[in-house]
Length: 463
Image 1 (cartoon, one colour):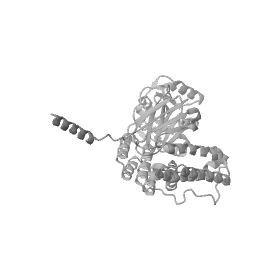
Image 2 (cartoon, rainbow, N blue to C red; image 1 turned 30 degrees about the vertical axis):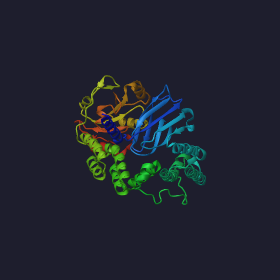
Image 3 (cartoon, rainbow, N blue to C red; image 1 turned 60 degrees about the vertical axis):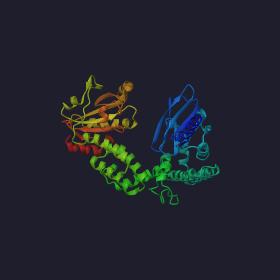
Image 4 (cartoon, helix red, strand yellow; image 1 turned 135 degrees about the vertical axis):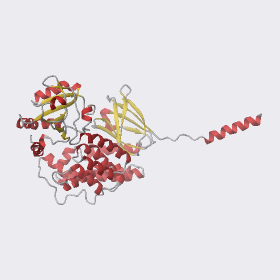
């Protein structure tokens, strides 16, 4: 009997030894922030965003995360004006203790606290050397370069003296260099704006930020915001040089990414970020989609853009326009698309919102256009995509800006309005032309501010 018990115990012991502990594949981020009154905070990183609930009663937060890569992250506390830089590993817990009223004295706990403390010192170095960005870019060349060099030297010394992990230090030294180069590249345009000297040009001796610039460094693309910004700036410049007047800029931009960027991570990300928005605006939908599909090697990206393409091809030129029904009319009652089509005229539709500054800039030009085409074969229709809470503001805006034409109120934001989503509207204002038969003439019509381009379309239609 004793032998049986002994054997049983040995068996249990063997099972226990063979049982593997679960591998941790997450991190816990937590903290306490005094004097912070919002309901949530946002953690962002390269292709990563997560809202984290904040307990206003206790002033604390805690969340379990699975991040897609080790690296640089930002904890945004309020509308990007107040934020904390972080370095996170996929299984390393991080705790933050701070006072919102004195956010510069934040304290970190966890294995990465040394790196995160370095970020605090880095921000203080910016304040010490740069003080204020507007003032900084207003300096004359010599003073600007002197201060920028001092800032770079201070950061480099700071990174080396803080006993940072070797891999992080290598990435950070590059990051410092790219930040320096990005400030160099921004100087001419920012100085011209801030000093009011539109003709300002840097001297021949001024450093060239893009000399020997590498378009295809995947690690730098992931780790450095400044590198990504500079790469986008260069791709935009090359595209504008290639793109002839009247050609499709968005299509040319895709082609530029394909020819200039060889790194797979950078290329796929740039193609995806461009296509998510640009596929809505391109004048050559099918060609744009086919080229994106040929250039990208990311399966998930291809599936996402395919969904957008399948939606947008239903509102392409010549397709029946989606119908909206019973939008409130400022003049009284409600109006549907069929009511407008019954008048047998072309429709120039402006999709706008009261919070949209660019929309408001188009209003005076739209009014002038309405006056010029008054009594002709076209109706000007403005559809507000404000939610119900903004109803009175919509009315007041019409009064204050003396808006004319047919003014309609949808009562829903564009993301929640089924009619708007059929056009995959990404930004406002959005202009659409529909013919008297209810077919789409142009789902991305020029804005009134594009003057001749819009007038030439009206002329072609015989308006």
